[in-house]
Length: 134
Image (cartoon, rainbow, N blue to C red; front, side, top):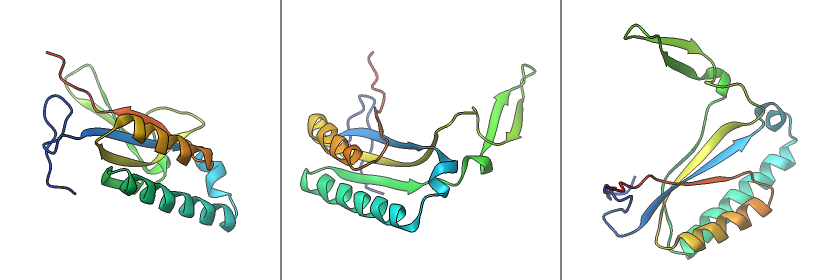
């Protein structure tokens, strides 16, 4: 983890903006892919790392996630408590299987790099961290 802090404006103490790259994928299909497809994916991620570094973007945190079947979901129970259930919050074909938290000096360049990453077969959702508009 970097030593920067995010301010109420969504900007880090280094003047960069912070973004979340979510990696959705159909878990059942992904688990069935041949080894060559997983190796291609690893090379694609390695290239993404190099492209980010070359553009002055910093990876704050990144990780694959455990399968959604191992998730815990919590919902308010309307009595001041919560109901905890096994499994994902919603049922969907695609689940978030990993993420990158990125500090970026240039959002347009980050979009370009993410677009290149996606063109290699990756599903990506790029989200900006919320900014305090008050």
